[in-house]
Image (cartoon, rainbow, N blue to C red; front, side, top):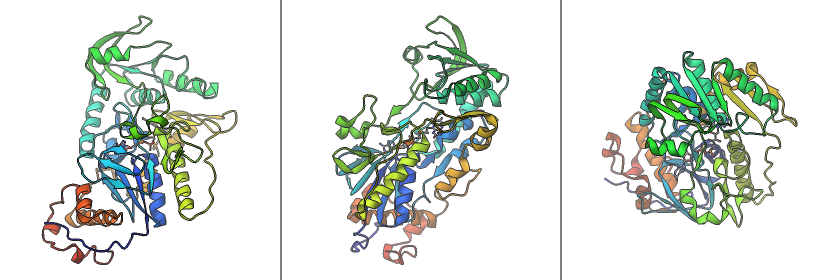
Length: 448
Ligand SMILES: Cc1cc2nc3c(=O)[nH]c(=O)nc-3n(C[C@H](O)[C@H](O)[C@H](O)COP(=O)(O)OP(=O)(O)OC[C@H]3O[C@@H](n4cnc5c(N)ncnc54)[C@H](O)[C@@H]3O)c2cc1C
């Protein structure tokens, strides 16, 4: 059965905006532009769910919390749509998608492909149902382990140590850190570093400063994939010959850029593989292509800034579309961070000149207790649920989502066949099998 559509495109006046990557930045910009109803907005992500990775480390220690960090995309956009697909190539005027013959043209493109981090900090499973058992598994492993080594005392390493030491008070947790201060060196007020260290140590975490574990050698020796942790009893030595025995070892040594599909812009890559942008967050000489979030070389790499950039780019695209003037992006002048140390602790630095440091009482209330989780459920227009949300609860819902996507893709001058190609197989649900003609579908009649 096909989906017969031969309508003239009623939406053709709308410009197409494609957002590649549905992380913090991508979701923000897509939602904002979709709301204006002036554009045909398509968000593409390889995953079927938004990963609220700010809370991913809590999900590694607290039973069932993982369900809270997987948020479906299906209610994010009202006029546009979210497509689950792997973008393989981005060029100045089109994008290509894995396994599909149709490429997508755009008027405006936002690249928000972010970064990959080793599990459990982030995960790239395409299906949410495959993510849950991984968090269950890592939680069980942590519960069973006696000696846990965390390589890297950046913010992720500190937060993981804090979560483990708070939830399980009987573990020996050691953080091996190559520098003399935790987190990013020389960025924060000295009081910030002292408070972070003191709180971790008061939870019994041992921190080895200025020592290194050879992560490359460990990965090779134990055939460790870069997305995994190392399990089993292993004895390791730091470069200073400190002997460490670990039942579990987590790599918290940094991010990898998701830039494979962006080769066409290689001449704009920064040395670390991010994309350089101008003061309007555009790739120089491509005023219709914007880059935001972790994959951009602008600003510190935080969800907060990815969203701020998304918000700004939405306003620029709206202004460009309506022939209005727009201002340069204003990057943050002063560093800021709220570092969680378990659910009851944390330290923060406010973005004031001189960097005012705030203690655990405030950070606990603002972040550590709830990790902004409710806010992101609301951003994705979902009711927060303690059970995993079925993404296709029934045939009607599912058909509705499918037809909405078809409708949005047709608004991009695609033919019906091309739209179907992009969406993959037709969903085989009772509602659709009984439906011969999309025009008569009750969900589509009024809107097409
Ligand atoms: C454990 C942890 C805790 C953190 N805590 C905080 C915090 O408290 N506050 C804060 O501000 N920041 C925090 N951060 C940093 C924050 O998570 C990142 O800065 C943020 O995720 C960047 O958002 P983004 O939109 O640029 O990209 P990402 O969130 O990395 O999203 C990119 C998206 O693009 C998709 N994608 C990539 N390539 C493709 C492709 N080729 N095709 C299709 N889809 C693709 C991915 O699936 C992903 O969904 C934390 C990070 C970690 C790891």
